[in-house]
Length: 292
Image (tube, rainbow, N blue to C red; front, side, top):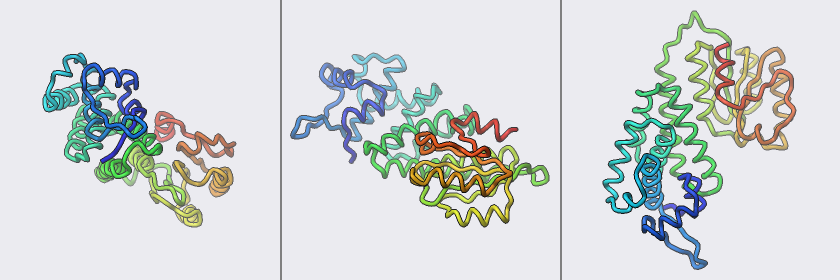
């Protein structure tokens, strides 16, 4: 069972800590335990309760009304709302609940309903990736159980691979050759998998190498495949002190091609990029490259 502090609750629910304390004291909606130093600690069950309350309150239910509702009634109202109200914040909350409960059936229901309503691409961009970004931040600060994060990441990975497999490619119409990989030590694959999907959907000839690829292997593949463009995402690797040199090596590896890089590591470090290397800050930019 995970243990959360009030700052974690604030980040996960979007509700200010001051408001959470008032709801506890006035309505008894949450019942945290306390450490020896009188610091509030909350369980997974308390987190689920707060996410239910947050979603229902955002959708018109008063706190005084929620304080009188049974837990099962709250959960039923949440299911009704998330099955009919497709505001992204509601869907992100619903996915967070599925993650906390390790509920694969709920995850599938939420994703499938959103895909039916908005399509696979929009669901990934507007619901799944904002959710993963929020959870990733909490994971880095130790506020989310790593097992929960791995559980939900693997379910998203399965959805992406299934969507890629369903694409019907017209080989005679394949355009620009694209090489996709993650550098050695880098394991955060979901963004690159979605890029693989987008490129293939737009009939690019894609060679996907995946996670943790040593540079010497990239060199061999470039010689054999001769890509026009190269894509990668740097989230935690290479280490910051080696980042500039690594990007320079990539630039020299494909002097006449274009290299598109993304990831929080690059956004934080702000290194000077060679002329043939472009930093992608958002999906809109990469989509314009793909469709060009």
